[in-house]
Amino acid sequence: MKKLLIFGFVFLTVASFAFAGNPERTGQAGATQLLINSWGRSSGLNGINIGGAYGIESVINNPAGLATTRQTELVFSHTRYLVGTDISINSFGVSQALKNAGVIGVYVTAFDLGSFPITTEDNPDGTLGDFSPTFLNLGISYGRKFTDHIYVGATIKLVQESIFDIGATGVAFDAGVQYRTSFNDDEYPDRLKLGVSLRNIGSTMRYGGDGLTFRASRNENFTSLSSRPTAEFEMPSVLSLGVSYDFYFGDSRFTPMGSFISNAFSQDNIGVGVELEFKKYIQLRYAFLYERGILDPLERISAWTGHAVGMSVQVPFKSGKDRTSDFALDYSYRTTDPFSGTHSIGVRIDL
Image 1: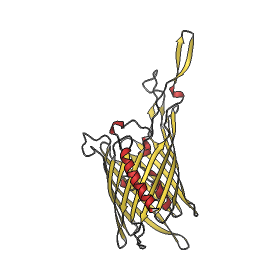
Image 2: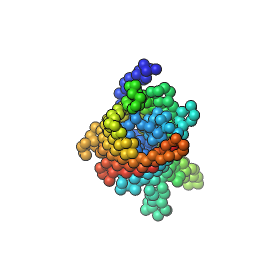
Image 3: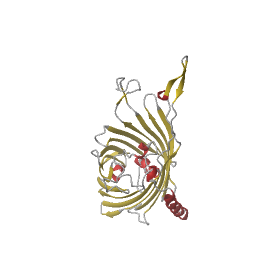
Image 4: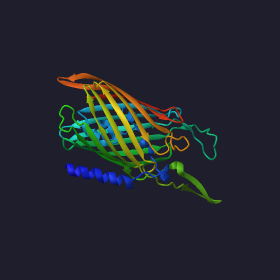
């Protein structure tokens, strides 16, 4: 099994170069909201914790981490996205361990993009009222621990985008593997974590609906109903590889990590970060996600400037005889230019 895993990592690493990002294709994919990390904990690491992702939040970067759920986990997160744009994101997820049958998880992410005036060719001034776009991601995930060291997971996602009379729907698939080892250290298990994930592989999408139809005059006495054609677009496929290692100092933990993220429709990313944990009560995070040109405002192709910081405060509580659960508050901030950054705050209960 170890030889098979090593072969799989080598194969996917080589495949990542064939899958390498293509800056010339930037902007050609749709459903790019699938790339937005709106979870309060993992967003503080810019999503680079591919090997160490755990719980329901792992569905955003490596669904294999879902298999680490002890019993039941509930997470809610609210994100103020690119402050100044009036965009907000709400995410909710729940995972449940099944007796000797892995872990199942369900999550939903809803985007509030604000309201816009309705305009037509006959009413270009927007006097017909307002409309609010609907962007919704719904996912069902399954994770399982196959051996003491190997975790696997997969997600099926429904992607829906619409306004009042036009919409598009698609289905995407994610899969991931994690290898965790303690080097026979029973006191501190799973110190080394390796992860590989492939995300957003799915159907093409195309907009349709009544809003694309119009009446065309064929002659003075005859009109017909016609439809404006729209182009198909692909989803933003991503291949990610990550590694992390835990160093313990008494009751505290220091975890450096790194990742390589290959984007099919934009530039590749290299991420580095650290997480500090103090007696399992407080966690501090920092990460930097690099891509070509990100350090030069004249060459940067997005609003993101690469930095992310985060913090979690976790409080254990008794939830039964000989049983302890955790309640946590998570926060993250990611830097941007322009706009005033992105804030995420989450509430997490691990039963």
